[in-house]
Image 1 (cartoon, rainbow, N blue to C red):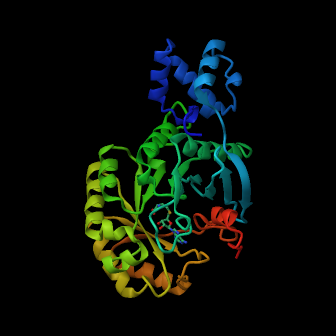
Image 2 (image 1 turned 90 degrees about the vertical axis):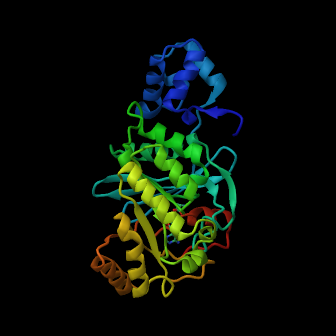
Image 3 (image 1 turned 60 degrees about the vertical axis):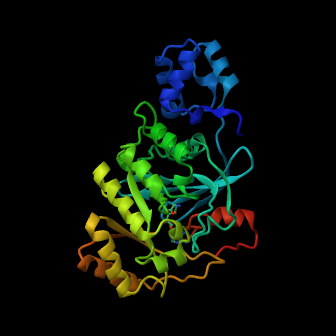
Length: 352
Ligand code: SAH
């Protein structure tokens, strides 16, 4: 990988520019996007309405390689967790989830992560490298091909797999551009959620792009002291700065924002945490998405008991906050982000 660009790395505009530089009309880009993302062919030779010389020029310049499926786990609720191999031997996780409103795919943006959240499996081995836009696109295509077998489509994307998307900003933006293109996969921006650990300068940059993408910020604590303990990134970008950036995003995009709040037993799940959290999020009308902690081997946290989760939710609601409780998908498989990959790399990482 590396030197050679993938066809999947190209936004529509960049493809048009490349074609123009090679004396080809812009409508060829439409044909190519159709073959790649609507017909979902796997080779240039299948693009039968392109002249042979163009197919050869494309082949000389671009790779058209799909990800290799290394492992697949299917849970009772239909969630499919995939371990997908990249061309340099690294592996990433992609998850397909079924909802009443459609099918979502959760994509990975980095091999590993350097943010270091103390409860997360994805960060255990550090960051290996960023994915290219095309490697993120290829995950959606892989999921779509899996759904093709049932005549279904990917309707939603959550950028919540391994990695911090805002540390791979340019590839993220190209990815969003490619998958939402109406000439290709056509997944509406409003159906895409990007989740960040709170990289403040990038939240401003993202807001300024004017996309209609939903932003989620991982909060997990209502005070700096507690948040820094759970998420060391908070020492660099403390809560006040995160909240100011969140407000900017809401004002600029007119989109509601959501805060993720994973509940760790006895750590951040007490009634006073709910009240402090409500004070933080109410001024910007943010949603709170509660996530029951998914136990990770080697991590020192426990789950909050069910009745305490319900109490926490009710307290937030009494304070006027709109709350959702994340429905858990695939709890009978390696559900939490990074667990399948971690186990693949480390045989001592035994199944539950
Ligand atoms: N890096 C991005 C997106 C990744 S994960 C971010 O930090 O937002 C999606 C959500 O799952 C984040 O809120 C993350 O903090 C949370 N998470 C990670 N490990 C978890 C675990 N074991 N149990 C519950 N939530 C977890």
